[in-house]
Image (cartoon, rainbow, N blue to C red):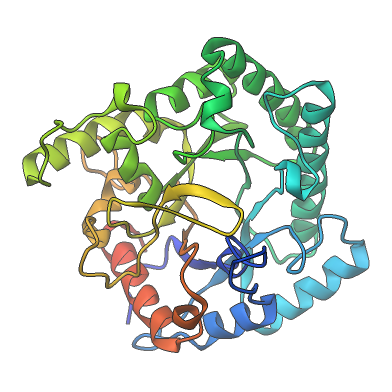
Length: 347
């Protein structure tokens, strides 16, 4: 039985949607199935505490009515879960717009954040969401950003500032997820520069995902910010030096944390751009020691547990559906999450 009670352990529901449902991709997995698989996972009497949600059809409509949200809360509560963080659908194909686009695009971006913050607050009011953030990104590609790096970063920051006003009004915080596919956020240095430009660390921060941030050290899409040597064979001392440097820069901004595994390759699926490949917790090709390396984000420079995250979430985007329908997949993931909590959590 687990000794540490915090942080609470969540499973992400969006792997049922991300990279699914578009032409040539596997079909989506509905929310009920994702909830069932999560609820059935158990390791030595320990179960998941909650779920993080993607506010997008067919899981949760961004235009959900109060009645819809009450039904959603009841459904999740019956599974014994709470809700943590929620993902705002800020991208053009989902009704949003590029954060560095024209006035209309940026207005659509902020409008989607506003709708997401309304849902997030409503779930708090319904006593189903005791913690968590609203997740965003730039909704812009790296190639487009590179046409005018300084100007585009300023545009993204301006959009994020507008979104921050909306979040503040709803008592919410926004976390920008660092992925190599989002323009202006595709390296650890560019991410810090953007957050500094926004300059509101209490409202707009960083969401770290272990699978994505590992690629930051390798300089994918931003070789100028590669931390490890060019001839690098995963030597432990070079790995630890790189992780320490990256997390020292980003940890002060980090307000949400995804546990994940990565084999240091990139993958895209369906309509999703190529980004850090999420691997199974037990993948023999995984480059991360999950239970150990989560500590780079969950402990400070002196090695002390920060207690910054009331919950942590597993993110396994773009797993094949066959893998996602196996109960052992979620039991192994839960076991990995429990070990992270034992190593870096608190009672």
